[in-house]
Amino acid sequence: MLSLRRLLLKGHSGFRLQHTAPVAVKNEPILDFKRGSSERQALEKALNDLKGQTLEVPCVVGGEPVWTNEIRYQLCPFNHSHKVAKFCYADKDLINKAINVALSAHREWDLKPVEDRAQIFFKAADLISGSRRAELLARTMIGQGKTIIQAEIDAAAELIDFFRFNAKHAVELQYQQPISEPPSTNTTLYRSLEGFVAAISPFNFTAIGGNLAGAPALMGNVVVWKPSDTAMAASHTVYEILLEAGLPPNVIQFVPSDGPLFGETVTESEHLAGINFTGSVPTFRQLWKQVAEKLDKYRTFPRLSGECGGKNFHFVHKSADIGSVVNGTIRSAFEYGGQKCSACSRMYVPDSLWPEIKKNLLEEQKKIKLGNPVDDFETFFSAVIDNKSFARVKKWIEHAQSSPNLTIIAGGKCEDKIGYYVEPTVIETKDPQDPIMKEEIFGPIITVYVYPENKYQEILHLIDTSTPFGLTGAVFAQDKNVIAEAYKVLRHSAGNFYINDKSTGSVVGQQPFGGARISGTNDKAGGPHYILRWTSPQSVKETHVPLTKWRYPYME
Image (tube, rainbow, N blue to C red; front, side, top):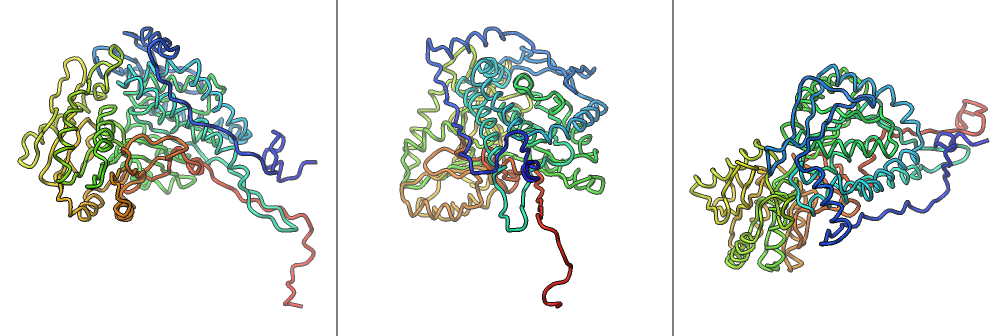
């Protein structure tokens, strides 16, 4: 007969407690898409097939498509006359139905062996790596305005890595068990949270949507997923891939909806167990306040996990390699139009290096091709995501044009007749405390403050204290003592800290991602500890001999 411990640990599924080799996974190779390559041909075909097409995306509740009367459209950022997706908003009743349907599946899914749940995500990763890769990349490029490489590192490589590494960590977690001393055996069970998890995903990474919904589901939770309006086509494709891989239809409910209504509805439910969020600081704060105001009604304290962007920096010391500074800054500030949470938008340069860095930076800026990433593969970045983003970024450029402290030294033009285009813009500031150096922009703008090279220590403290964010940052220096000093001063200024590398480009399994302060709860997506956020461990003690008396020896 199997021991209770093995029964509790899903022994019937073949689980064994003895030491086992780690689950072997590797980062997904990033394809080159060279002319004539099979991957390029497949992508070109997918892009051609989707050209001018509108994908119909219903709400999906209990595996059934549901249309409401509140119709919305996802527009192509670089050609806003193209309706990429037609979708509908779930109303309050439908969101509540989605919650109830999810809850009805919770017990069976939670009790399913973790190896079986993991296999679904391994299969989903294989589908994205193979037959579904070109389609998912094409939908990300057209719907979210990404170039080939930006779609590839996101919708393919990062999403595949999230699924594979999370599954690896989930399986290996079961082997992390407490010590046992005779006559007892101690076991830790990694249960799901009790209730449902609300996943609220952003537009800028297809992979983030898959991870926000997928990671809690992997750990036995049921999920109500609100995808971004401006990433609807790609998000729906990810959802379809998960179902194709074997995910039971009731585990994740796909419910596009109005943001405030969704937040209000899920926080009203007594069964809310967690919120997995990526987006703006105001939205996350609002959700946190709503949960706090309703704490008395919940069956458990909801877990809140959030990533909210940053005011990411490049600090340049006089010992820095100029080529690395210029090329790293071009990529960090302007790839995907500065719409990465980790994009550099403020840089501090010593006066001794600024003339050469400025010259090189402006020369490279002129070579950047802004345009349609589908028709012209030489495009470096495309339009910002929508009209709201365009208006916000344009206001920052107008601020720079009107401020006596700011000078636009490159770019600065905006155009929204066909798409929401903003030139890669470089601004020089005389005031390191100007709002443009302190507030998140989320567009292709970088502002440079030139400092006296012998005052670099003051600048390090300025970087640390001048914004409330703490997501990413980079130090460029060859002087090891300066690097060590910078690390100490900037210890809490960045959750992802780069030395002689750009502030963007974290890789799952290599640089787990997340920041603190108002940048989020720093749960480090892509790392081994992330999945623990979505478990509620239970400690079980089984004693194997009878207790024969209640009195202690000292009482004799």
